[in-house]
Image 1 (tube, rainbow, N blue to C red):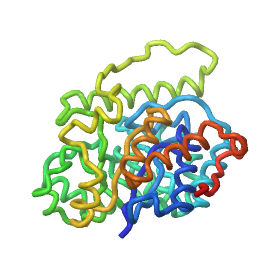
Image 2: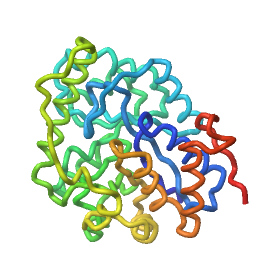
Image 3: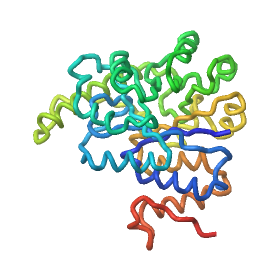
Image 4: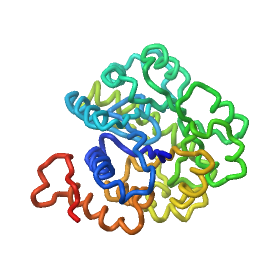
Length: 317
């Protein structure tokens, strides 16, 4: 049985994730049985349609092609986080950069996370090869609405994290193979500010996209920030939350029930923090120190391999 992990981010954590993919292929015995990279999610900067986490900057179009090629050549989908809830207008739907990103990656392997009904319909009509994923940002906490969402034409539905560890309810869900569990959420359970946070990020993303398109050489003004202490939690602090999913529960409870898709968040975290979550969820305890050291040496530069881009080599035994 494959246990699919959907991991962050194909731009910010590109090198880390390619090292992970190659290490998994070369040393599968170090990982829990069935571990598979189901997708790498994220967005190219600066995509107006991006949601969930803020991501700004610019990128060379050649780098877009390179990143897609690197992951796709390994059989790994790049999954666009086009979950901005404020994308509702025709002029936004025609955004040149976002449409370019869709065009160059529409090969039937890559995927899109959606939230806005207008954007979802636009993608279904104009880019029909993309499998669509229903975003956790929809915050669906009513069981009947969850079931309704699972019955729609989505490849996966990323469940609201508040369903985590509610096994009596999860057992009753249909299409368990379509459910994706967000296993390391940093938010507090039933956070009252979460929706406002998503909408603040959505507006910020639109404003930044306009800035980089029209006034890239001017300072950013009137930027609305949103402060949340939960966003500063370190990985092992999040393991204390009731919504945290342990690796033991993944392999001993979720998977036997039919849940085989798990999302690890961390788009805005450092490579070190994200790497630690990979060790925790994917690597057998007796190999964690060895695999962590191997990957960190490749990530930060090891004599003899520091300049080999993202390629990795078999660990010596």
